Amino acid sequence: MTSKHLLNRNIFIAAILLFPILAFGQTTKQDSIWKPFKFFVGSWTGKGGGESGEGNYERKYQFIFNKKFIEVHNKSVYPPSENNPKGEVHEDVGYISFDKLRNTFILRQFHIEGFVNQYKLESISADGKRMVFISESIENIKPGWRAKETYQILGDNEFSETFELAPPDKEFEVYSKVILKKTE
Image 1 (cartoon, rainbow, N blue to C red):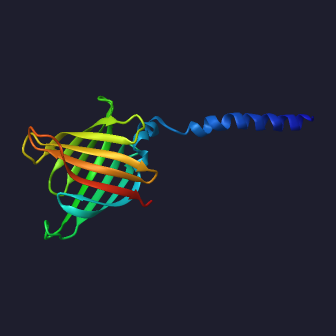
Image 2: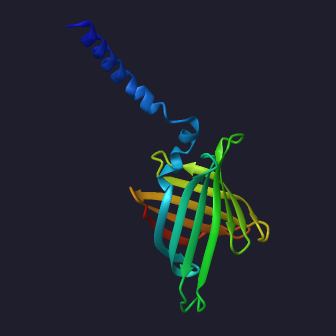
Image 3: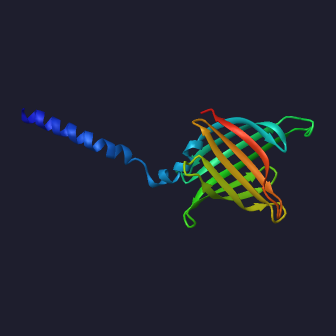
């Protein structure tokens, strides 16, 4: 074997050995923090309902500010019904952040009705498919109210969201439940 062939062979072997290191080395610490939430990034539509009736949902999750936050845009449209003759359009914007001091995720939602909910991630199931956020505070509502958001991954492109409310000194009751499917 000539020295040229030997050199090319050594370069080829080195490239094969280094490729996995270089490929996996692209994952940053910031990327790994978001691993539990990467499933949600994208656009979603769905149907669901509850107290406001049956409605259609649009949702979008996207990274912002160099992957420091996930921004969530939600719109729910409830057509007129017997229990809700005028119908309703609900919108909220949310932000998921990682609180380094508490070593947990925080979800803040700003609702068209004026409510601002701040949730703390309470639990993630061992398989990573169920996440529960419990409110730490809710602005513009009487003291003592609590809220809970539960996300359940149902398949590769589908998840459910259950929103529950609890009046002061009472247990949580389902306010709405929706099944969302990924569109992009």
